[in-house]
Length: 432
Image (tube, rainbow, N blue to C red; front, side, top):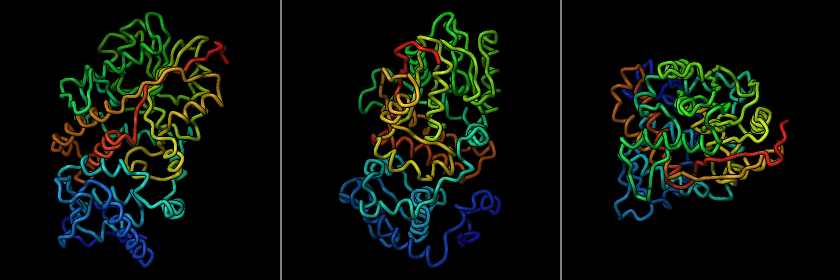
């Protein structure tokens, strides 16, 4: 049970407290107190093994190699942090940042070492308690045809103007592909649009898209892939469940003079009909959910013409971590992508083989490129905080999105996450 509002004057306006009840409130009661003590011990245990200097109000410090210059995590309200983590695990950790219970001047620097040790932060004997103590995914966020549009709207229909503040002019919201990206390279903002075109063009090449190609895009975004495909002479049908994205993508297509070549529908991928020479889907499978992965691939197979190819860009994680966390309700689910589920290369290969005649024939990893893409978005977002506020998004929302972008970047920098461009083909050429 949560207290109505924390007794921390000045932290939240009444309106913000009403909008963010689980951030403005702390768990109370005897069970919360017991869990709080356990969480405080676990956090100190975990932080002793990461290259982060954790600083407490009483002067205590923890972290590995604290005598070196390390990213600083400043715990301003230890009891609040412990109560949140004890009650909700990593959801509570993120909410503690949103509430200001801990701060830092290097959020990615703090989160990356924790992400690197994600599988070992909790001692192995205690990991069996995960399902007993952590929140479960609510059935209302299952990606059924009845729920999916609502899940998508909670993120993608926030505001086109919001996304325009931190995306480049292509309005592409997925990993770019930079030229000659070596370790340590930090591409400038001016390289991002070209890198997004490079990513899109590579996917279109993998799918064999050219003059006369009948192309299906599952997940429209804001239309840049449609524009690039139409410029090649393809006829494109693109489907999305975001009304905001559909509106802007249609406008961009019309402005470019491709309305006769591109059709953008508000439609669930499961309801698409027709036959297509190629299917392209960019970072959309993350919104499908494990339960529906077979349907996703069955749909692609059903729609592909004989000899057709599917090019998919997918965020992945290690298979063992996917299995361990697949039923866990996370901070990202609660605040950013309801119903989302990351997959693994092993799972994608297995589910496509088990349920379809499709075969994974090509794979290209580009996780370091996503880390740099996210860095550029994060720097742009934080540099335009005032403009985000002018759109009506409050202080808690801005801290939430800063955490989301940094949390994602840390996942790719640590190697815990990766992103792949994949090609699926049907070796026998059958069309089911």
